[in-house]
Amino acid sequence: MKPLRIALTKGRLEKDSIALLERVGYECSSVRNKGRRLIFPAGGNRLELVLAKAADVITYVDQGVCDLGVVGKDTILEKGGIFYEVLDLGFGKCRFALAGPKGRDFFGGYSSRIIASKYPNFSASYFEKKAMDVRIIKIEGSVELAPLLGLADAIVDLVETGTTLRENGLEVIEYICDISARLIVNTASMKLRKKEIDELIGKLEQAVSRPEKAEEDVP
Amino acid sequence: MTKYSRITPEGTKDYLFEECSVRREVENTLAGVFLSHGFHEVVTPGLEFYDVFDPDFSGIGQEVMYKMTDRKGRLLVMRPDSTIPIARLAATRLQNLPKPIRLFYNQPIYRNHPGLTGRSNENVQTGVELLGADGFRADLETVSTAVEVLSQCIPDFRLELGHADFFRILSKQLPVSDESRENIRRAIGTKNYTVLHEMLSGINSPQARALMELPHLFGGEDVFERAAADCPRELIPTLDYLHRLYHALSEYGLGSRLIVDLGLVQRNDYYTGVVFSAYVENCGESVLLGGRYDHLAEHFGPSMPSIGFGVNVDAVSRAILAHRSDCRIEPAEVLIHGEDGYEVKALRYFSELMKKKVRCENSVFRTHREALAYANEAGIRQVDFVGPDIQTVLTGRKK
Image 1 (cartoon, each protein chain N blue to C red):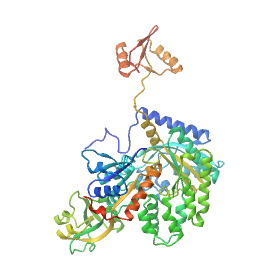
Image 2 (spheres, rainbow over the protein chains, first blue to last red; image 1 turned 135 degrees about the horizontal axis):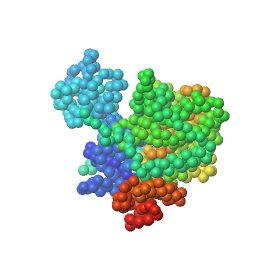
Image 3 (cartoon, one colour; image 1 turned 135 degrees about the vertical axis):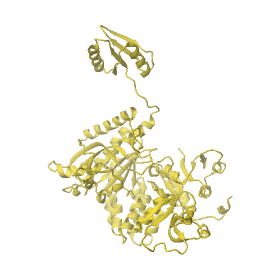
């Protein structure tokens, strides 16, 4: 039997994803000592893990070269695609927020606003729903800089604790939605390999709904 | 100014040699089956008025269609779908024919997909439409034809069955806005259990509970039993109908290829009854899409219950090519070179060999040396020089 191939998002979500897989009984030592490899056998060859950037996880699953993926809701909202989004994994939690210089009335007046964001598509659809006339500028790095430099009136970005905003004289104008890591599945794989995928989803679902304390301390 | 004269637009490509021959084989196989089932070929225009594909009933977003205007400034699109223009054609021009009308088509459709995803914006589709036919017999024939044509092209695939009524009937009675209904549809279509639960768990009705169950209801024949356990009364006929169809198809010997998904909703809006699609291993998208569309013709003329499906010929060809190790051009078996003054005799000799099914190529070169050098380079094993008599030279090239 061919192993199920799972794309994991590198970085912020990586540790939690691997810990979750180990908790439901898939051995993942090869990913923990990765070296220069890019594809890792796991769970006694029942799985094959791939580490990729968030947007690429969606691409690999959408195109069917990976059967499943773990990726943040933020990337799903920004990039879209065709796949099943089957499970909220409960980690990597933060929120999308609209933020701007403290004390300024963002919604007042008639002039059109300039918004800086790493998430231009998501920002555009957010303001579209509000029927607001805005211009969106895509920024790649620290978005908080844009209003400080006078490039933008506000930003749309992920907010975890709000510390970065406060330290730069910015505040949340509006929380837009909650974000967390999601399990996504290729539409054809879901049908062609239903039994194996169902089993995996079932195990993960159980683990997610009953979190254990011990796993918090994994280095 | 930048010139784009040496590349093709994103989402399009040149098809070369074996890609063309495989595609032609697939098209011929499909057309052969359709003709033998009594379907007649039609071709609809590559350009049509935008109104034919009005997003309100086509479910095709305006951003997906390639648009231009005609001389009078009216909006035209490049054909983004074949079923809709065939419904237009049948409703407007074929009403004097006895029903049902059996039509098949083989033509490209154009859709402007989001960039940099590797999807084709130009796809050849071959399919059938059975127009003016209602009921079990028509559904059974169409789904079994779909299985039959695909199995003649690719050995391994699965066909998935669903029904548009499950979502439509259940969602109709929900006390929610159109926008939420669309969000619920999307959540079911993407099997987004989390969002679905959030949106529906507050509503205490059998319909809401059944909707929450929908995306889970896929798999083998056991789905019918699982669904029946908690099925709202108004859906029992639909469930029984689909089960009857499933049962008939397995009796016909197609059971091993069938799967059921009652949560199939992410389809063209015009489907009203049974819906089905086919998947092959290592191909992320479906290779065949079809379903019953009883109200589409009403947008163009008299009502005509209909069912049909389209095969994505390019995706099927890719699946076939993936199993073949190398793609190369098959050289001719014989190069025929007419000496000066014997060009016409060479042509006669050419048609003689052709009748014997020998694959020949005519030499356009002036000298023996050029003809031989070309044969060598192209891998043609034999050169026949046609003069007062015919001399055969072997190039020593292994094919």
